[in-house]
Image (cartoon, rainbow, N blue to C red):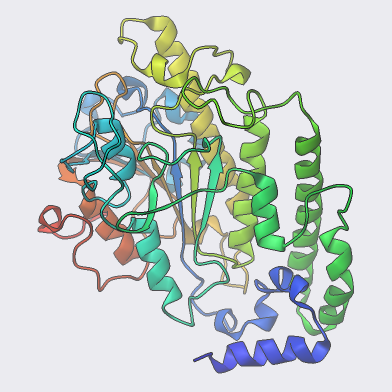
Length: 448
């Protein structure tokens, strides 16, 4: 049953003669949304960001003398995040203990967010047994379902799955989000397609009538009925969408800028240096969707497990996965892997910067970042050893209410307990286990 606030808002817009094309621009305005007005607690938001092929432990974790808990000192990989040091929580000693079929890359990727085993299947990886899809729902989708179950927290899109250079193939190395057992969720890695999903506009320049031109009359009808804060917010939204529209069309007509070339993914449409531009467009779209309350749960997947992206914009010609297999003594490979991982950290910093620049709507104080929990994940702890121990987890933002500005060594806990803590932090505190139940016997982690 729809709430009275929802009916009132819907009827109000209908009485003004506002068409459905304008709704994406109006959904985040607190003047029209009683559920977020009057100083009520701002919504909690979740973003999960993935990058592949493990990390460089010596360039990621604090020194051995840091102890079980220490103030956060940033090693080289995390230096791009220096401005957000006080908003970060770095977790060591969190292991993916899921075993069963599949190789470590497969289990690292497709068992990371579901935290349960892969189903039997015929997809062969490495020298291990073949496997299929994950046998359970992923933590982002579990939280999505919890939020969508209540009218007070329901959004137009329960979740949005963004991709950057994710190949057009479906296997346990390319999918991290699952709607349920044997139900992988494919990310959208084309900003044009994501823009179309959010705003419903065609991306063919020949037939493109700007979405803003379609909705401008409707926006003018609503403007006299909203606060000055919402007017400024709406104008910012309109300008951002105009810029995104232009950037997307420009990227689609520029044939010289392309995605990284993957050795194992010949069907990916784009082939080299457009990835940084596409990444920023996807992040802008993601932030815009959160700011306008189109969704409160999103994921951002860079490439895939075992991915062979050649990141030539970083002066790296070799495939990422091949580099990650080089021994620690290969200093050239270590230097290139450092640049790759620093680039991912820089994209996370850009995401945090954008969220931090937008005031929380509704006069609640703070920024979107203060009420958004970002979790940066990787399928392996270390690429050349394929270890599922010491998975690098970076938590950033205030959405979970965790105690930030520090590094914790948790001594080898199952990552199931981390996801249980995350679910509770997002208001889903009725959840008592997640994924494989035996790894949750000690309950959620204490991160407050």
